[in-house]
Length: 466
Image 1 (tube, helix red, strand yellow):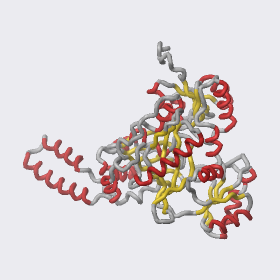
Image 2 (cartoon, rainbow, N blue to C red):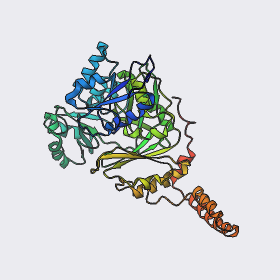
Image 3 (tube, rainbow, N blue to C red):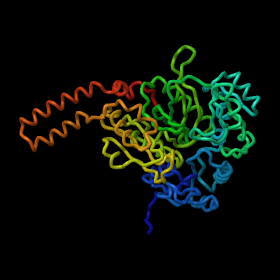
Image 4 (spheres, rainbow, N blue to C red):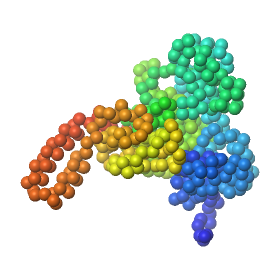
């Protein structure tokens, strides 16, 4: 069945081609549909999450994929650059509407050495680092940087893979043996010969990230800084906004804007940062890495921002005006790893939003995420404790939330009391309500200190203008 006049006469882009068909591609397609765009995907797994939203082409069907789309983007920065080069050339010839983000962004994001060098060129602070091509150079780097250090492959590796923490001299040999194949291109993490990178260990108080969107006309809109917690190298939880970071927001927006303008970037980008102390003892940020795509730490924006990162990426790719990136409410996003929780139990938590990626269960695999955004911010931490209690894989959060009170809020107690009023006499209700309200008042007085900080921190009054 066809629909007449499905698109405005002036709309030259109807279908977006996405390189990759994982959950990011799926959520991009979800954001594209209300705007009137269809998506197709280049992905070798025909049953990938994105297959629910559009046709999936195998990599052997590249020409068919190209023919099916008007403009192109990606969901994963390790996309082969040869494919992207072909799409860029088609855009330059005028036969296609564009490939976003630009090839240079992939080239830099795929190489940690180039990435760090770019940051330093743009006067964006990073941890100290040294290129390593041999065991002798690794020993030199350990001496120059001082132990401990983190040794990484400069190419390949994600979610904690391709890294080795060297704590003492006796670890040097093991670290080199573990990662040396990457230098020759024989390792499983990267088929391309590439040096290793030794990074100095720093004392940091928090890991945060900022996500921004850049339009084709150069407009940049930034989301709030968020705080990230990892478990076994995989993102476990993101809190948005990060409490007490308004004084760092301008530093972060300046940094990501510099990077995006330098690359002539189009679309959404994430910049991962460490919060540490500068020489004067003031809070400062160090750039860790960029992700030239929509990012896991921005999933909260689907419900928690006026315009989600996914919609803003689509808007940028098809050359529409960017949307407002302000928070509508504080939120916490938790990754579902390995095993699905009981969806009924999750949705029984007020303010819970459940997102399944339609993937088979497998240890430490990202198969979904849950965003908590209760109406009352003081309910956020208790809601997290309830969620952690029912997660099969608690992603290391069980200790953090073990002491958080998960009893019903005052609003819940009042609602229950009102229901009882219709079934019981007024004297009984009066006694019950008095006891329940006293107990609830005690609970509210002993809430977690982090919740107190959330409540006390103005969401926008200290935030730099976007």
